[in-house]
Picture 1 (cartoon, rainbow, N blue to C red):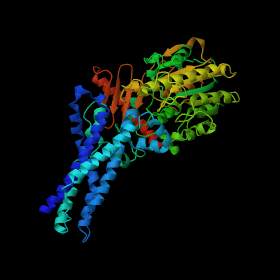
Picture 2: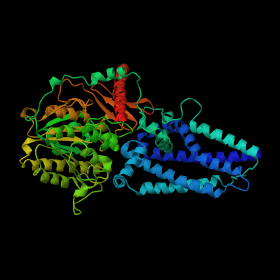
Picture 3: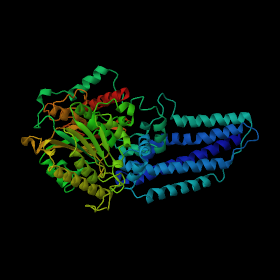
Picture 4: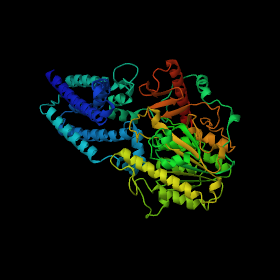
Length: 626
């Protein structure tokens, strides 16, 4: 019996070692983002550790299962001994993976506001060069040095803790059986988190309305593995709040009810050329007229004064793949999923290019990067766009940044091509320089001291090249019959560096209609109606007298009877915006993680949240059907 106790002691020692590693991993994460806690709330760190224990125990148990099972099997086989070297190799290998994930996670969280997940790894596999380019905005030395230190410290801690640990390799069947049952029972209990009906999930660690506290409490490696081995989000919706379909429709109806005859026409023609300028990461914080910083986008301010500006528009989500679908297909974001990733699904989506192609438009898409990224190319070609120009269409002598050809070169190519383009044409350019690592061909207007300064500088560059493109277009014959639609693909944490993913400022983006085809009385007009990226399609099609019935998530922003409401979505949360209140809901912890007005009626806040729940339940239901 003493030997059984000694063997279980060895298992306990190994368990404690990995528990310490989990604590170190969390400490690294908290230290990297300590400004989100601050010295005033230092004791909240203990709450984070306490609430994360159950997931830590589960993660450690998973790690211990493999060596424990192998050891027990060998114990039943005569003349076979468990070699300590096997455990050493296993431990070193896992330490390497653990700390690599740990430090990659810090970079991802800094940029995305989400921890490392299957979504992030899929993005890397889709474009390794793009992921490397994004990482260039963060000094490589610190994470690599951190990984090395973590692995070395972990290994020496392991050697120290196991200096006096011995495996007796008991061969008696009865003793082996007792050891196997006790160890398996203990590990299974921790893996499952108890014996209730519900298995362990990340919400077990959630305890606060502060998103960062909850994210810090969740064991990073455990959540990543769960993301890979849980049921596919292609098959099951994470948004199920109502069983009664009639109830869902009743909740959503007020948000989409309007008088179609009330739409205001702002164009002098019903068949203008259309040029969509989709700006990478052009968040409202860059634009003074939207409450942003002064001096970053002076040319955009000039365009605002001559066009129709929608200053209360919000991105559908936080990534380019979802922004593109929101802009052209008027399909809302799907949380942990992205429909453009699946060609078999996105080819069944409607898109505005199809309506325009049917109406006689000639479609094209321009992008300085790889158009295959996130299936942009296949999406465009399947939705009314016959010509795609990307990085591969420029010579080796074309100046390039990490992501591809500089935007001013792509704009120049567009100007050249449009001279020979049949009219009316529908063309889109997706810029790329205002993206990590914020490369510029010449000097940085705001310096390079911080990433925020680099971001301001690349935004200033983007502002300049867009303005130059429009000014040069004015000399072209096609200009007077062209409508320019300028919109961002999504928002960004920069330049403010203070908005969490639960905050609507992170999703606040510009939308501008510009050109001589706008009636003089509407030039310089600001539309303060709250709306979404997804509303662009209906707004545009109504101006062209084209059908918009296929886009039931899209609403006309130029219709005074359209309700003021917007929705925003990230991997694990979603929010709803009205003039009276903004509320965000964390779908993992099942808690409200942001309220703009804490003194606003709770019943009205709950009613608003119910609209958001019904909205995303229906959106995801459609995603699964496509």
